[in-house]
Image (cartoon, rainbow, N blue to C red; front, side, top):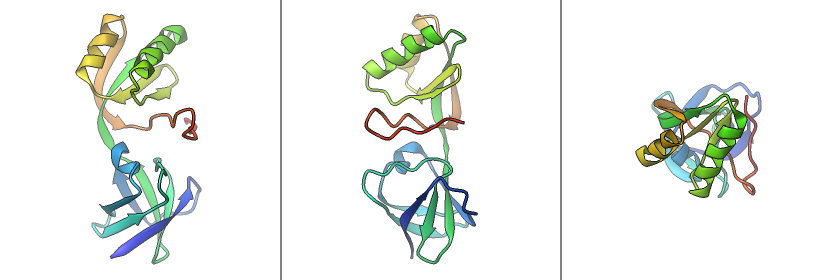
Length: 146
């Protein structure tokens, strides 16, 4: 079986194959996955590493593998007022909910209780299928947003 032990980061190396994973699986350092070709691969990466969409890995046969953030069921909050959006972020963070932050929006794993809480505060919340890339946290080496 093909194995992958080296993380190349989010560089521009030309990838020849891809692995599509939801966020929960992108936080595991040891797992079996399937390449876009259907080939099974064993990931044996540094513990604590969180893979992000666009990251590249080096397989033991020399292939460059691109990580793709799979679509997941998420709730997306939109608001034109940055102060109100900061308030929504506070309430989610106070509940230790991983949150992805974009320009004018927040995203978290779908939870109808949290959706109702935010709607009760006057926010628009939609449930959709989208990639989930939450912030790394104060000590998690956050990432940039495009």
